[in-house]
Every structure is written in C-alpha cells, then in structure tokens.
Length: 169
Picture 1 (cartoon, rainbow, N blue to C red):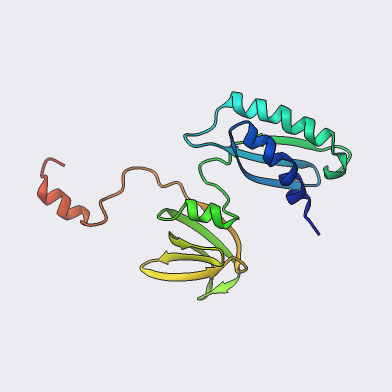
Picture 2 (cartoon, rainbow, N blue to C red):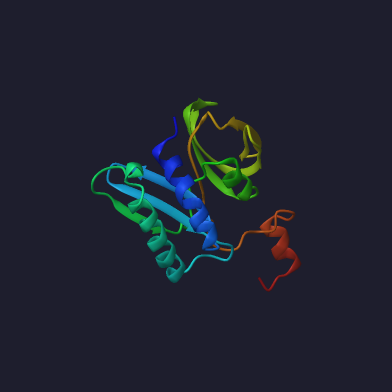
C-alpha cells in the first residue's frame, strides 16, 4: 500500500519539475502537508509562492489524498540542515558532515556524527573518528546534513604546519 506522503509526492512531483524546481521531500501528518522544494543555487520566495499555488490547486482536486478535512499546506525550502531519506539525498552529501540516528544501537550508540564517505542503494558509509562504519538504510531511523560554520583547515596539513609556512596568520 502506498503511503499518503508517497501518493502526494506522485501527484506534485511533475508540477514541481514543471516549475523548474526539485522536489526534496513530502511530509504528511494529521494537520499538515509539507512540501520541500529546492533548485541548484537555492530557492527564492517567488518560486515557492508560485509552486505553492499549483500544489494547493492539485491537492484541492484530490481530496482523497489530504490528511483530514482541515490541514495546512506548507511549501518551503528544505533548509541548510536537511533531512536525508533517500539514496539520492545521501549521495548528494558525500564528503560532508552528517548526523545519523539508528533504530538500534550500532557499536554501542544510536547517534553518530561524521563525514559521509559513500552511499549506494543499500546503505551508507560514515567516518566516525577515523573508523569507517557501514549502515544499511533499514538501520537508519533519521539522518540530516550538518552545517559546518567557518573555514576548514586543509586536510593535508595540520593547522600548526600551515601557520609555520605563513607566520602572518
């Protein structure tokens, strides 16, 4: 059986693509339908407003997909720290910091943070303090990207070595 979120995704994805946007995710709860859209380089308010009108009209025409008699439609950007749910979401964030919560403890912990090393159709590999750890998608309860603020030191040289080369730092 298809979930409500999947049914809504199938309805609105062609509309979002026609608006030259990417459908990142659809979330459904008893009081709201949340449609997250994006595009390379970021999304603007006018694009969100325009696609919200189209999605609203489509949902009005398919009342059987709505979560209840009254619900709120939210159309927005997925934000800077994004929920990662699909293999394509994970592949997009290879090489960046992620947080993963597993359904059951893995190596004694349910919460992990590290650099995403790989992602395929079966699962991911995350670097946990220098130790690559593989997780299947079935093990992952939640995952999201992590915004890292500020410049990062070059991985090939420790910060001290960089300063020794350039004392003006």
